[in-house]
Structures are given as C-alpha cells and as structure tokens.
Image 1: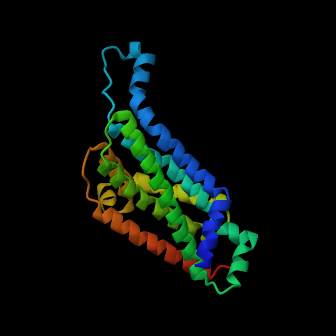
Image 2 (image 1 turned 45 degrees about the vertical axis):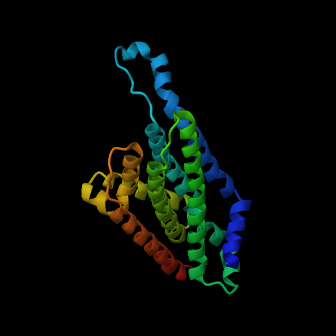
Image 3 (image 1 turned 135 degrees about the vertical axis):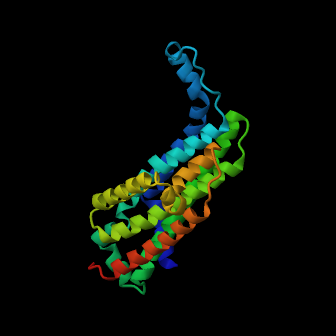
Length: 250
C-alpha cells in the first residue's frame, strides 16, 4: 500500500498527469461539435463538387462513433508510447533498486504498477466518456447513455490490456523506444487480425470493432469471449512480467 501511494503521488507530480488527460480532453471536447457541424462545413466548402449529393443529417451516433475511433486509434497510440518506460525508467534511474531494498517484493513492484496505472487510465477514459456524453447532449439534444458507456467499457478493457502489455515490454526491453515500437507493432497485428471473423469473435482483436459497432448502432455483437479473453490475457501478461522481472539484473 505504501508503494501504491507512491505511484499515485508520482502520477500527480510528473508529466503523466498532463499528457494522457490533455489528449483525452481534447478529443472528448472537440468530438461532438465536429460530428455536428462537419457535414455543414463540407456542404458549404465543397457544395459545387457534391452536386445533387446530400449528406445525411448528423446524429448523436456520429459523435459516439467519433469518440470510439479516437480512443481506439490515437489515444491508444499515446498510451503505448507513455507506458513504454513504465518499469525500465525506474531500473535505469536506480529507483527500482532503492525500492526493492525495502520490504517490497519484485512481484509487488510490478503488480502495483500495473494495477495503479490501469486504474489511472480507467479514470481518465471515464472522464473523457462523460465529457463526450455531455457534449453530445448539448449539440444533438439527445444522448442515450447505453451505447456510449458500453462502447467505452470495451475500450477500457482494451486499454487495460495494453497497459499490462506495456508493463511486460518495459520489463523485457530496456529501451523505451524499443518497448513502444513493439507495442505499436502488436497493436497493428491485432488490428489486422480483427479482419478474420473467428479471431475478432473470440479474442481481444474484436474489442475495438465491437465498440465501434455498438456506438454507431450498426450491430449488437457478442461481447463475452472478447472481454473474457482480454481479462485472462491481461492477468497472464502481468504474471509473465513478474516472472521476467524476477530474473532481471538491476
């Protein structure tokens, strides 16, 4: 608990308290007005080129879809880059050695970091979803909570999965750039793998697509297997990170 308190204070006193919330706040605040006025802007700027084509009137679903796309793409990349040095930075600076001379096990060191930062990401995404919900209601006059919060829950599961993945990579790879690059590569493989139906139906590869479908109202996919396998894999990644860290020279 002492080390967990230290992690929370460290988040509040370093750049991590600014970067992820700033990115999330920007997209949460700008998503609803962009979804509302983009068709009008396109019509006014490129009306002659469109001819007789009429753009459909925007709805709250467009705002929800905008938010889920931003989280599953841009914000996920930011998260991967931020956590590329989650543990390696403390190993390089010597903070890890100092902490482990106290009655703190290596297992607790890794696990606490994964849990605290997963909770931090959860809080930031919940705040972003809440802002999107309020903005959508303001610009569209209606904003049912079910589709947005269900999609947000799936994206949270995906985000926690990548926090635990970056925990492992930051233990296994000393270079921040190398860990972040590996994380981006795994994200790309997961995104491409989502094209294959069996993989998207039974693995984390389907989380982003299912969230987009729910937000846009284009389907009601089965969520049990993608969520279950994501939770299991997240726990396994933390356990593997602990195992690797146990044998790591500090």
